[in-house]
Image 1: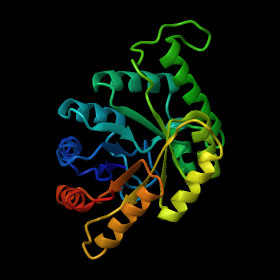
Image 2 (image 1 turned 45 degrees about the vertical axis):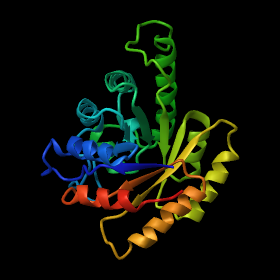
Image 3 (image 1 turned 120 degrees about the vertical axis):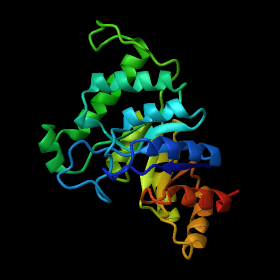
Amino acid sequence: MDLQVVLPNESAAMAPERPAALAVTAEELGFHAVWLPDHLLPPAEYGEVYAGVYEPLVTLAHVAGLTKTIRLGTSVLVVPMRDPFVLAKQVATLDRLSGERVTLGVGIGWDEEEFALVGADFRRRGKATDETLGLLRQLFTTGRGPSGRGVFEPRPRRTVPIMVGGISDAALRRTAALADEWQGFGLTPSQFREHVERLRGMTGRPVRVGTRIVWHGDKTVLPAVLEDVRAFADAGADALAVAFGPESGFEDRMATFAAHAHYS
């Protein structure tokens, strides 16, 4: 099971070099991937509810330039707020520049007010996401636009993995139909196992599965958290992403967790 890190990105006061510096530390500690969240124009201040101060794809390009092996992903990019052609170009470019290390984690969004603020259609967000994922596959595979006209470059030299985040039935169906990976959140190990069983029943394709947990450094609960880590591995998780809380002290919490998280 791969251990991953959800980088902090919820404070406008955070120094711009911090996400990349923390990603370098995560790589040195042996974590497999780092993720960044996304909000374009939240209706309230960035913080615990709304993360994504620094635009994730641009920030991951910075991270890519300072790291060598750690995988880079979005958890999750709010796809229906994005122009699909620009998104395709950004992802393909980032994947090429990073040495093929990108996973595009996607979600449909949840805040209707934020959609209104950016002029996006909240009611159509699920269908728009599916259409965008289909377009990305076409552009990446054929190098041509929907009508067969227009040249798309750089074409990825591999299949860029698409991860769907979410625990709804719609998210599981979207994963089964269109994605390579699924990431849950807020699940116990038993709930995670149930979701995976439902997903496996929807598709015969191999789909990597994982989830996100939170540990903000409270050592009194660390034994229980580590027990959950083992339980997620036993439940079939291919990956476990950990959010370590605010930027201050982030390195120490990562190091403590990495030193204790034995799951095999």
